[in-house]
Length: 94
Image (tube, rainbow, N blue to C red; front, side, top):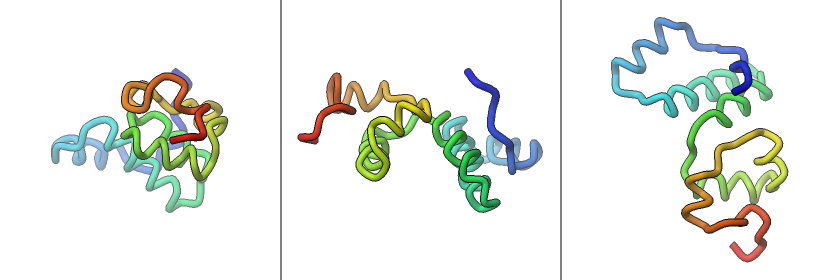
């Protein structure tokens, strides 16, 4: 895995989130939101790409940005592959 993007959340805040029940994917999303709020779009997308997103979320990203964007950013697609079927990124009928 590539090095993580720049973090905009302190270690202490991350530990508070974990203690509050947030899983690792939730922390990645929180990092993404914090980076976006700081105006760092690259870090925001980088953090989001580390999370295991719902298939429907990836489908929305595909429709708004493109299948190639999902590939280029390195989003994890295993859940979407299982949900939509193999080759869903390249299909236009979904």
